[in-house]
Length: 411
Image 1 (cartoon, rainbow, N blue to C red):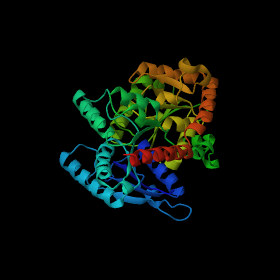
Image 2 (spheres, helix red, strand yellow):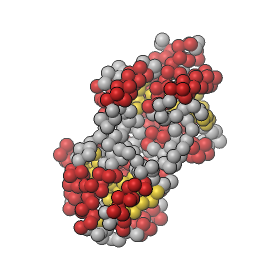
Image 3 (spheres, helix red, strand yellow):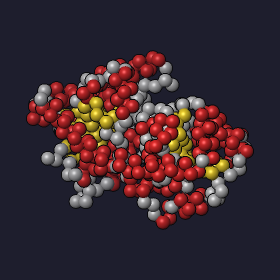
Image 4 (cartoon, rainbow, N blue to C red):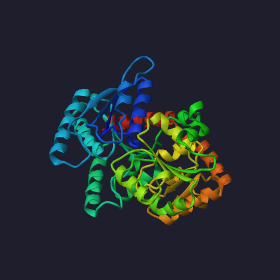
């Protein structure tokens, strides 16, 4: 039976959470559901998914309903947060969705509270089922104890205002339950889907050979790539600290930084001070359909992020046939499997967050073991083609929604 589904996200910037949300909307619309997407004002150098979502049409011409909530913002602002809550409550009450599905921390807390209020006040026949997806924890070791306490308390309260909680990785469930957030029976893992065909089957102009030529890499260059915002917690400084000397000693080692962000000027200033400007290639913002093309130019994807849910760039690189070196943060080891954990199914090398020596050792190992890294990539490609397809995610959410509606109707 077709449902009226409302997704709520804080912002539609280019990021893993937002891509997951837009792909969910598209897939659900293609299944015949009436899909709406609400979001706060969009700004920043990260780029936006607004045009993609707004321009989307199903095969029979239906659109995703787009709704800007002007008071919803990422930063904590008590006055605007109260206004956002009221705005969201009125909007949900008027739309009367069957499902309210929140994403990201701010939209998740405010959206669940507003949706639950509608749920409690509505007649049983029009009660919305409330679902939240954890794309990454708002609390982490790099935040102050006070802020972490507030985040945990907010998530504990918000968990009482929804029927089910979707985790994009098993690690998310473990971390939230360890903080006393939610109940075991509320959690279900649905891995974040992506357009796997786009990564598995390149256009003739986007093969490894074509992209290395386009970017100016030679056959002997060892290309270490990063796909991430040039921003806090993404680990670009650790890359320079960890392999700066290796880059200086090996002119054929190159860094390919795909992305842009608030830290761009400072990071490129560091690169210049280290005398590495000729070895660091930056692309700036890249359209989503070109990310796979950029990845194919790499010999290894380096993802030294300090916090994630399950970083989409890791399975995306593996789908492109590129092995991964990454931090052990959150759900990353569920896709980047270290040989010390499972040699038969290894897909990359894992090092500890902030461990620049471990980062260096992982990259050097990849350089010195070309056959092993190609075998890792092949295993990862086969694994991720099954685990991270958009169809699998959309079908998983169908099951989640059916269960959430049963829970809503039983109350």
